[in-house]
Image 1: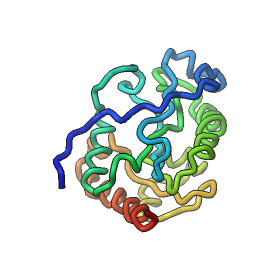
Image 2: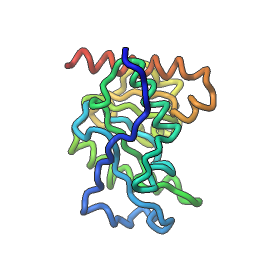
Image 3: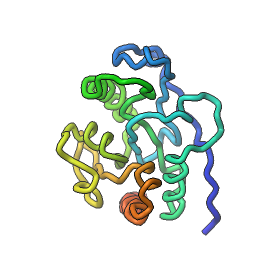
Image 4: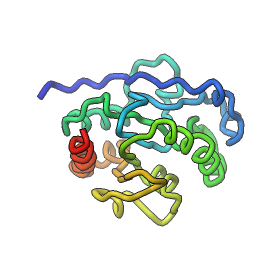
Length: 192
């Protein structure tokens, strides 16, 4: 296996029709819209809660801890980075308090649902409880109860894994994170 070196995956430009969207109110916080990164035609759609500081700063080549942990695990399970596309529930990074429930609902229906319909991924992987609860539209579910199993959400096989930042903070979760990505890799490799 080749050695691992984190890298910035190419950013997918926000569609011109959405770049100035003001519906959710996060534009007032001064952050830019980040649509996603990686291969937009990839069979694996990874959903995170929102862009981080690195994604919010255009042109910064630094790879943040979230991306480094995700890329390390992708490498370890033998997935090609071209098989992965990363996007977000919220397309802007919140920097102040906001109405979490209504904002997430607006963003889910205005942006993410539409994005998924266009991209038609083979599988969806939600990372972290915010992404899981938002995408599953159920505040009672969590990663622990959903991981290593497939669930039909909006017509797509969907599973869950811990958020890479949680994995960095609690290294004992890394083994589970690897298991979850191997679970996704196994499904994708069967369909290729």
